[in-house]
Amino acid sequence: MPKLVPEASVQVDYIEWRPWADDRKYPHVATGAAGHAMVKVLSKDPESGAETLMYELPQGWRAEGLENTVYENLMVLDGELEVEGETLRKYAYSYRPEGHRTGPVSTLTGAVVIAVGG
Image 1 (tube, one colour):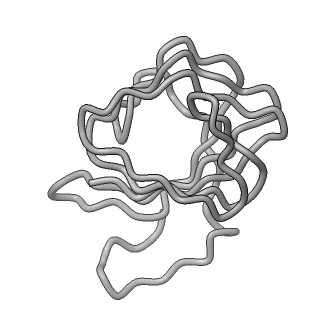
Image 2 (cartoon, helix red, strand yellow):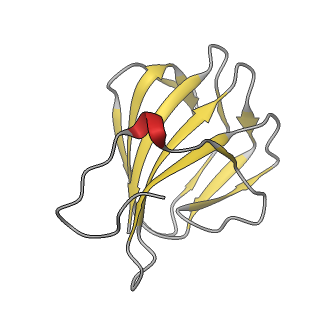
């Protein structure tokens, strides 16, 4: 697990990929998800629960909908993500406020995404 202090830095390669748990509530709740998404927790604020995450979405991953439980800043690092008919390619950025509903979401190519939520 990475250090949890503001001035910490971490080598992402040393953080283990974990399965995205269906009961995970931050930064969003996925409904109708198909595929095995993986996540790396890059940082977590122990007081607020805010996290910085890296997702790995395999080819063919999809969800009928996502509802943000906190705000989320998202950037595609690799691959492509289809969000409500719009293609987010490498380095595309998206912001979603708390309570925002998105869907459908999918990837034909697979995607690696970084998300900062509060």
